Every structure is written in structure tokens, then in C-alpha cells.
Image: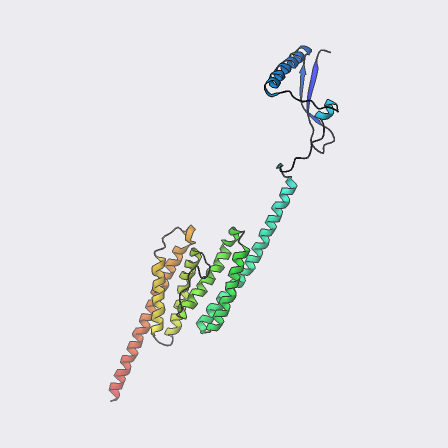
Length: 287
């Protein structure tokens, strides 16, 4: 023969046969020169690192083309695509379940907070405490349930519901003349708490107007003082909206609410003084 053919094949686990990936055709002289070069380099290798042991007891071809062995314990192997897909699917299903539960919980939390604020304006403080206690348990459940899913915890629908809880707690404390709860006491992030504090001004204005319907009183003045204090805090929060979640817009709204409330209270006070003056005048005219 005038040529020698060297086939390089790849044998994959589970495949019925090997597939040739490369083929080299050499002349007898070239093959012998390759053989001599390999022998010389292997001799140098063995002189430096010791003799290369050859397998015994079985043909060389059987040794070279045997089926792959299982990896030893502790050796990390590439996971199968199917297994990896199963794990990803399980993670997404768990995340979807947590999201659905969180949505349901936030709706219930918002309802409790709305009931609490309604009870505050009606003076039903015992019911307020009951509603806030139920809301607090839901807040604890949300924080526990979403501990491993921070993206769901800080999602808009979750933080909006938590903001409602902060607002209800603050409104109750200010109207009932209790100590103002801190973010740590109600387990609330600072940005969510400050937004709840801002929205409490709207409920304080509503309370002031309810009071003014029956005439001007010091209670309305006290609540207006709290509204001014809230605005004084908000104007110092000059941070990006990405951090505060749109606090600048709420600050402008609070300023507008405070100015309108102050105007309404001034008119009410002037009307009360006018009525008193008219009564005194009427009394003098009757004498």
C-alpha cells in the first residue's frame, strides 16, 4: 500500500457507534518518521518523569475504546439540560405561588387599613386597634413569606399595601393623641414609612374639616400643627425618586393640602368671630 489512513473518532455515552471526526492520510515514510518522533519524545518524557505503565490483561483497542467510567465521588459534572430545566421550573413555580399569595395578602391588608381609618374618623378606637392588629399580622406574614423573594417584597403592589398600613398607624396615633409610631416599631422601610406619613396629611385634613363643621376648636389647630410638622420633614427629603419612590410629588400635594386647610380654618375662625360680634351687637340693640 502507498498510504496509511489514521481515523480519529468520537464515541459518546449512549451512542450506538463512534463517529469519525478527523482523517489523516500519510505515506509510509511519513508514518515511520512520525513513529520515530513519537518514540523519541516519549523516551525523553519517561527519562524525566518515569516509565509510562501499559495496561495488561486486555487488548489495547479494548482499553482505548472502553465505555466511559462513572465520575468519582466529589467530581462535579455538567448537569443535564432537562435537570436544569426542572430546577428552573420549580423555582419559577414557587415564585409564582409566592406572588399570588402576596397579591391576596396585600388586598386584605389594604382593606384592614381602610377600615381602620374609617373607624378613626367615627371615633371607634376599639375597632381601630382590632383592624390594625389584624393588619400587623399580615405584615409579619408578608415579610416572612417574601424573605427569599426580595423582588416581590419591594414590588409596587406590596409596598403600596405596606404604605397603607403605615398611614393607618400614623393617622390613628395623631388623631388619638398617642405617641407617633417609629418605622422600627411597625417594621417598615424608611421610604415606605415616609410616604405613609405624607399621605396621613390628607386624613388629618378630613378630620379638621369634620371638626370645623361644628365650629372652630383647638383640636383642629392641633392637627394642623401636625400637618405642618409633616411637611417640614418632607421638604428635607431631597433624594432621587428612585430611592424615595416619588416622594417629591407627595410633598407638593401635602403643601397644597396644608395651605387649603389653613385657609379653611382661617375662614372658619373669622366667621366665628363675626358671629360673636353680631351676637354682642344684637344684645346691645335689645337693651
